Image: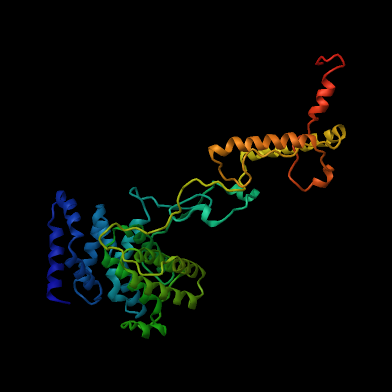
Length: 419
């Protein structure tokens, strides 16, 4: 460790101790911009034998329990590196050098599982419904969903998953180690949008190292220091993928891609279904080319949302189609009774609009109406074929009596019209 780093860290340790209460807020706001100090703190954490490691861990814990939001996030950014140092020391069975790191992790965990009044917290997560649109999907892009009785009963209902209450821990053991680390990584992922680039890089690097240490891929990655296999849980790997998915779209494409491949490699060896499902889903949704997102701009996950223009399906049930269906059935019933009364006289279908659906000009409108009138008069005088032979054609228009027949029946022998 360089003397410059040691000087920066020692100045940081003494500065906060003499800071008045009224200046904590402004101090916390300016602290995130000290990139040289943050890099020096990372070097201290990466050296378990450093004399500054214990006071640094104590200072970070003081930041976390101070109640200041900016100081809390400042401590959270070192969480991935602290986890890796603890797991690496645990794999080498040198637990004495990781006592201060273990105390810091336990302190953050015990603070997060309770609220301000000291009661155990229960976290709730709402699972979105695919039938409702979100920033990630549109129901129309998924395809047609069958409106079954079971689907209608579940429509509009939201599933809520609860996490907690979590028990307090006094020490980390092999049984509760990844239960605590998984919850801590969940707290880190909740503040991902506030994490600097160096913290996202640390997350991707420690995910790769945890997954490949002790396996043949370690020689390919050229990771040194730890040769023992580090056991991981399925839930912990899912939380790692959550942070890596964010890193993809916030300027860390190469490191995130390498970390996701290593997590897939380890999940296949361990036969964990949850990490395999999440990792393959992320891999399938990634664009073909590398993302060129700015590290200083607004951090977000880019998604494509289909346009919200109103579109009516050709087979959609509308009031016009229902009305037409009702008239069709009514006319067919009347056609059956009229056939016995009127014989074989029929008026052919009259088309007011063009069959092909093309618009006619203003000069063609009167000519089309005249041709339709001529066809109507001609059809009245013609004798139609048997209605049974036209059963496959379009529905016939209600039969009417012949104009000549009506004139003959309406006028009596004296030449007067009867009503």
